[in-house]
Image (cartoon, rainbow, N blue to C red; front, side, top):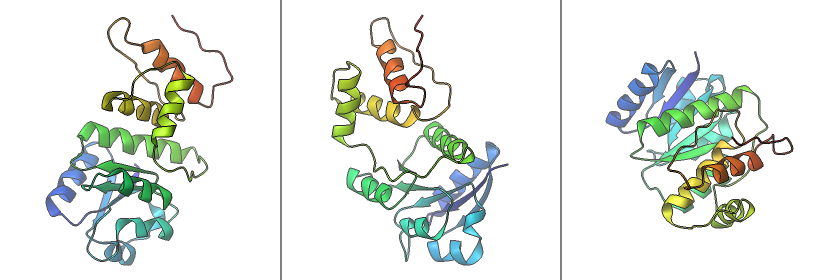
Length: 196
């Protein structure tokens, strides 16, 4: 059973997230500050640490340098700057509060699966507009609205994993373009893709 350390100072959020994770077969320990997490637990013994960015005392990003475990940063101050700063400091990913339960579970599962395969750590910052444009241009995709930016971000996040990905939508919406974009960004990019 994967072990997760949850560092969150708001009791309601911490309890709700703990219950969500435990219902999905994760073993969860919790702390309300970085100091308490470090003094109470062996932080290297976790498959994932989920930490709020803004905590009493030290920020959640301080955990990154104290452990080899991947650190997922949560922030209710969902600005691109705080997300990029977290990623530059070594966070494995970030998620904005309030978060969708399915999105949280998908993110946790993806991180734990990729860490279990001992993927080398990445120093890549979060997605920039140039990264999104590169994905779009390289794959013949058009659009820069918020929905398309989210699509490019999903492609960037999903492509390096070994997860099975379902692409669905109306006829003519570009499902094959998305599938090719995922393939082109994946570790299997040099192999054939068969579209039916």
